[in-house]
Image 1 (spheres, one colour):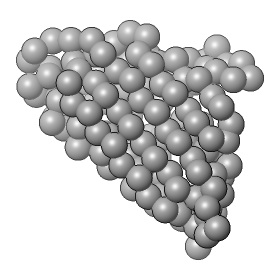
Image 2 (cartoon, helix red, strand yellow):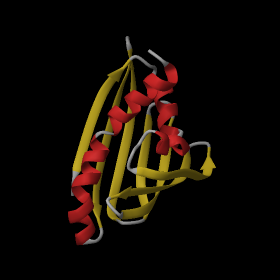
Image 3 (cartoon, one colour):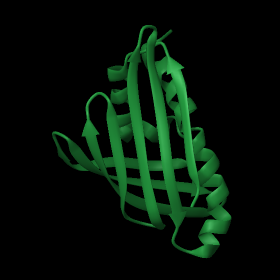
Length: 143
């Protein structure tokens, strides 16, 4: 199962970064391989999400449960879709000059062909998630 983690220091608060990650309806605006993203069954500390990714003619939709511990953590687990296993977590830690954003993902596609075709692509894309959100924060909050 591919496991990836990444972190970045940003000049924005943990709360600001948490809010960007939770605002998933806007993901297709800045995450190239994501063509649809939405929240539903929203409550105070959790929601379900639907995301559709597309790459080189392959298009897959998956559903997750996103549990919130504002503004410090978002824990994501697989509900259904092309993964036999998907767990992910965002952590946001305030620092003297902004915050540190950490992202962890552990996944495996359920079909071997999908794992061979999309595994490396999804792995690379998931690794670049932190950088995508850093750039998004620059655009939304300014420098």
